[in-house]
Image (cartoon, rainbow over all chains, first blue to last red; front, side):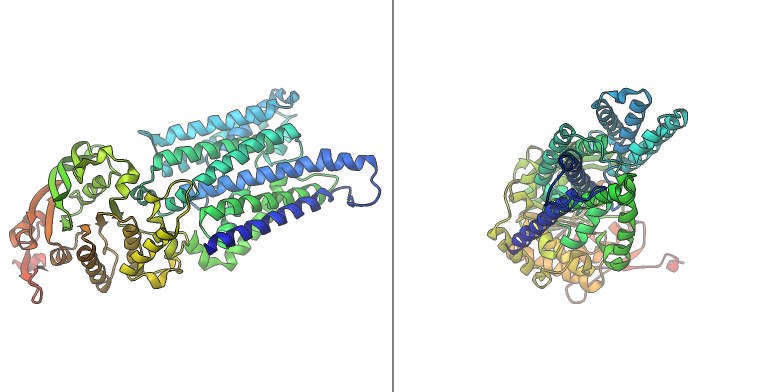
Length: 328
Length: 263
């Protein structure tokens, strides 16, 4: 059908943009490197040891946040849903704060691991609160997520006010950072994100039908409780993995799905892959800005995404006010 | 032949018993109306038949087979439901929406094929929505949207279609349009139609049989002229009415009386 052809073209174009953005980012930074001419030896170190891993991580985190944003907004039929809505990020932040406070971060893997475990714990807490008789009640789920988040955020604040020395590190972690990484992290988180996104894509058609409401989806023969559980578990693992390594990078999971819904429409079969690619592109650009605009000082990337994301989103809202009202 | 057999149905929401032992059969190709005051259990029965609500007791047989032994997908191929609230907040096209009706037939790793598209188009033709194909569902009028939702239900190629208050939010011209459409479908394709409605005049005009509920029990069932009588309505709704006849169609017609008229 014609539509599938159009989708392939959209994805093709986005892939090319992603590739070009990655290349440009690779040669931009505190030290501008030209891809030709004579290279001193440390250029290679900068490119392959510093910038490339960051770009790869940006891609993975961008995909993970955008895809889970699409899923949460679709599943909850709530335009304000984002990947952090179920308390994952606050859980991870608490885990990270505790690890930093106790000095457990000397071993390079322990901080992300503790953050990941805490994010899953907070999620389990949210699910337990909101499920009754084997069914997840979405409205309760949202409320529980907000309340658990607030509670955990208060604990993080408590730790920060008690700890003097580590406060700066905790703040830096919470604000999101793609700088401290290595290829092992990238591989592990990459598996979570790519495998998870692939699995989610299998349910793209079901996600479309859920847009009609849970009851109608049931009338169309969809076993919705099972579907909700599968999707929540997959997205939670993705978000947990992403947050544990990059901190809280806001706005990507919230606005990218919205923007793509305006451009490619609400069909999840195109919305999921297109959001994934744009999420990756957006995060590469944001991280490149984060490490260049105030170089040699680095700005947390979460600040950049919000700083640029919010005005852009307001611009879109103002431009398409009537349309957005009806389209979510 | 009975397509649906409902026996001794009891449904409960937490501590409220919404349906208290209801039994009735539905014949293939029948046009049945379920009527009654708010909270009498109409929608609960409908949702039980579609197996989205698990009754506490009782059995429901579809073509002689208990629905509790059927998978959701199998039921969706035989029973389609148009729920009362059909708001869609996402800008899917009308064709997208109708194609979703093919869900129970499409496997996880399959794409919808040409025959699905043909069926969707045929159903849009039947409901006079073909010209809306590329319009967004959230930009349609209520009457158009309801016709699209019926087209989606028909795309499930069901044997039974259940409609919950299909004209609750419509103007009178659309009320007539929707019911005319349902009668046409029932005659043309031998579809079994079950409508839940609180509009007694519409129900009495279009349904061949009515089931009147009160407090989760059947008060009366039969032809409209047997069910819509002054005494029954007075007993069930606790209000005074005159039952006349539609001068053209002779169907029972309810005329409401203001409460202070008696004095």
